Amino acid sequence: MTTTQLQPEPETVAATRKLREVASSAGDDDEIDYEGLAGVPIHISMLAGSLAGITEHAALYPVDLIRTRMQVLAASPSATYTSISQALSRISSAEGARALWRGVSSVILGAGPAHAIHFGMYETIKDLTGGNRQGHQFASTAFAGATATIAADAFMNPFDVIKQRMQQHGSTYRSVVTCAKSVYTTEGLRAFYVSYPTTLTMTVPFTAAQFTVYEWAKKVLNPSDKYSPVTHAISGGFAGAVAAAITNPLDVAKTLLQTRGSSTDERIRRADGMVEAFRIIHAREGWKGFARGIKPRILTFMPSNALCWL
Image 1 (cartoon, helix red, strand yellow):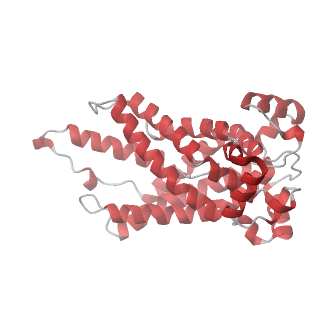
Image 2: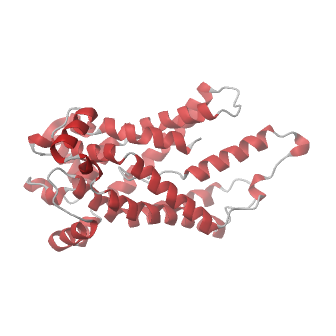
Image 3: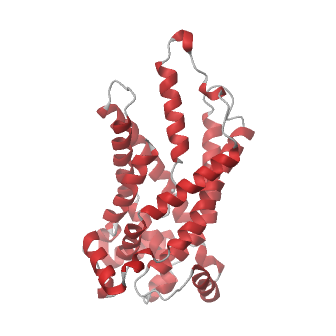
């Protein structure tokens, strides 16, 4: 969940966890059927998810911009950064502080509807496939989650391409519309989706690592399993960091594909998919190339993931 990757909605994660904790702490005579509690209207849930998505992506946007610039191959010397602090200083002094927010309008336009689509489709499909029946309906929940992610990422991908084109050093695009028109005119519709398979491929290991590490860290830090917001936040932040690090190679490949049209490297410009992107990265920089931008990526996911689990 990106990088503008969609993550589990904070409201969904927090509400489900707290209800389960209340249920597990209740006695036999006070058993709570949290599955049967009245739900929030779906349009309210979609609005909440939309606002949460915009806030999540916009809050640390300058760090995301630095990640993009660090991941771009064959960048000019003036766009080569050794640390996050150096990048912040250099960009602010050379391009002005506003440059750190270049492209944020694309995130605002895309992230809100994308999160609303994700939340609304998840709840709708889960209900249609029997996921809201009493008991754990794993197959229904998994199908609803996968379908919602595919749809939301399909909507968000073009906005992510535009965002990264505008984030690049030397970008002359003055608006989202100008950038979108230019990309479409020179590269066609495919330019907005050449990275889509990579985005979906990245979601699986990210989600698996995120939940696995979270559950492990929570058990280590809180063996008694008593309600502890601090434990949830620390575990969530750590899980986000690990998931971000594990999937960074895919994120570097995704950035290469999304910014290929702006590259002066002919092979990069012709890259047609994830496999070719991996080949180019390895040929240019070896295995270390897959670690490009890993620090700002971790810094982006740690706090957002910590808040998700509060």
